Length: 130
Image (cartoon, rainbow, N blue to C red; front, side):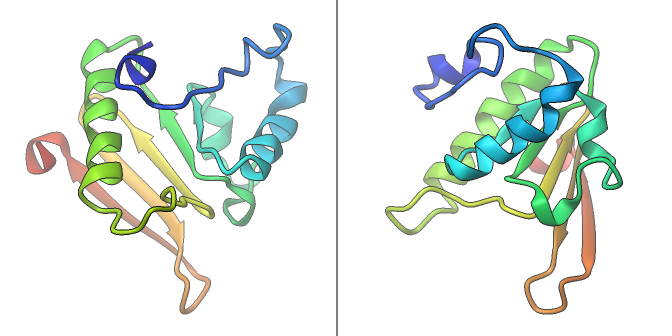
């Protein structure tokens, strides 16, 4: 709800006819990619590249915490910064071939480098990106 409160366009998987099962994970990821959306999930399977390859990621944001309200608020601030400060075009920010994992301690971003197509990873503590 925090994302909607921040006026972000959100489509919830559970709202789509109440389907919420692991069998639909690949379909949900493909659907997000087709619609140009990011996939926001608590399902840790999405961090596993053997189950959900990074090259197929629509831009996955994993909320890896146990109902920590601070992580949700940080997510809204982080996405708002992406949209307002780091996007110098009129087009939405594309996170294809990337995964972002948010924990109570910080954030890890895994992505495919555009120049080498190798996997790269960078991590930040929340105190460093406030």
